[in-house]
Length: 255
Image 1 (cartoon, rainbow, N blue to C red):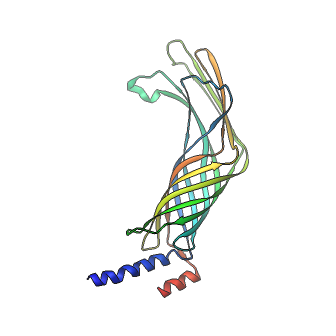
Image 2 (image 1 turned 45 degrees about the horizontal axis):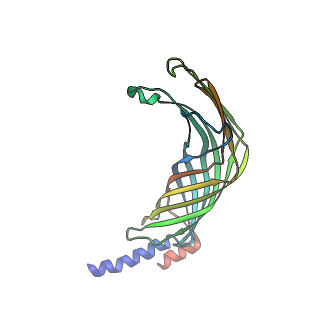
Image 3 (image 1 turned 60 degrees about the vertical axis):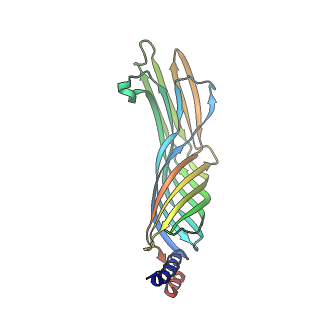
């Protein structure tokens, strides 16, 4: 029995490696990330009850990858993402209704992206999981849009009234982003793959602005924030069986 296992294990390793030599795959990817914006103008001082938060968003991608060999891979595709702003004011609240603790205004803008990533894949472990690191760039496209919010909160204590408004705008056009990732993936015997990764995205130009105005304790505040599309997030991808090229068929037939 031991001799049989010893004979089979190298054969399985050769078969799995052949599925990463000159092969094309396509797959689907989903994820979550936090998009950060930054202060650019207006009053430097903010009221203690004002909060400028990270904008949370989901992502969906249709991706293709070319595995040159067991160590190198190129990946691209079509992604649907979003950037935005979230501002909030802390309210007086009851412990029985903690959900009313914050009054928020949100704005969200959809983007379309075409990334190009080059990855180095490390050697797999005994369960065929392997680490990989990736670097590259993404072309991100967004249309010109404006979103406005206006909230009057007359429950802010016995005498105070808070007026809370925001106006967010995007700049139409294409933008270049740098992108880095680190993750783990598993190659199954069927040729399918499952991948998990952490992603850092850095925008090189301003894509959107948001101006917020609010009145608290009889004083009016004004702040403007910018957004380059920067985010940190997590992705999960599933790749289907590879398309065999002529050379990969030759490798498979030899093995």
